Image (cartoon, rainbow, N blue to C red; front, top):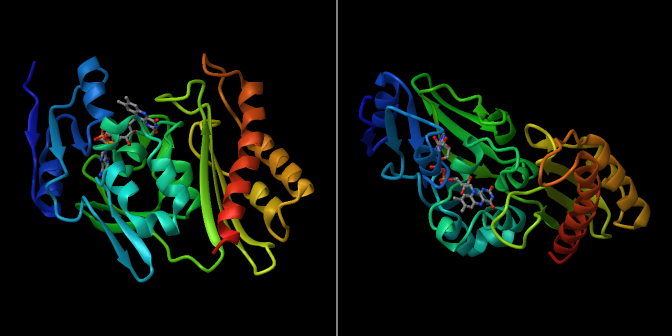
Length: 289
Ligand SMILES: Cc1cc2nc3c(=O)[nH]c(=O)nc-3n(C[C@H](O)[C@H](O)[C@H](O)COP(=O)(O)OP(=O)(O)OC[C@H]3O[C@@H](n4cnc5c(N)ncnc54)[C@H](O)[C@@H]3O)c2cc1C
């Protein structure tokens, strides 16, 4: 058995060089709340761990051109404490803050939540509903890609073995815009989503929805963007007919599994109910701005 090596580079360039030169399996480390659990259980057996937290910019939140740049290893706790971010993107912040306990919040990052590639990851439906992008770096350079292009299946990402994410970008918002995220879990604390729903809307002065994006988590191998559900909202106020159409579109999009947390039928029903409730919160928030 070879020993596990650990490296904590202080620049993106060094991290890429170390990852590119690694023989065997190399894993990038952010907060470790997934990776360390997997190491202990023997589920992953890397030869090298590259800790990204000493790289400038990996932790922290900046406002740029009216939008936000969030370092990939920024903890849920820091995200929750950022007033301007919480005002602009309450759904993204509430999703990030649903991850784990207070202790987990001190470490858990958006990049780790995304790249662990669990279908039930809480921050991902909210980030995708927000049209967030992320910056991927590697030996071939830097590219900015939509968050939804990263996860390609449970536990699998589109990143090359020597690539990693450095930051997330949330765009500037028009007036009367807001987002929301809700998940359903069997217990009241510390459980994995049976369904998660993200809704991001822009309303006009009369409360009619002009733009919408609706996402669902934990009901397919990767987060679903549901254009039919968004279409049910656009051009409408949030009345009963609109909510019924949203509910039906959300249910129709689901391709869930059957497991101990819920049957296929149950998950589909919950997806419709959650989409309704999440949309109601997003509309109410947007109307207040
Ligand atoms: C008790 C407990 C409760 C939890 N509850 C929830 C919950 O309610 N909801 C939920 O969604 N999750 C939950 N989780 C899972 C976990 O906390 C989250 O997925 C968390 O966001 C992972 O972030 P991290 O920084 O700790 O990732 P890490 O463990 O450091 O990394 C996770 C994965 O992402 C990769 N990675 C990390 N950073 C990068 C990067 N910059 N670029 C590319 N790949 C990278 C790693 O190589 C690894 O494969 C829970 C975990 C625990 C232990």
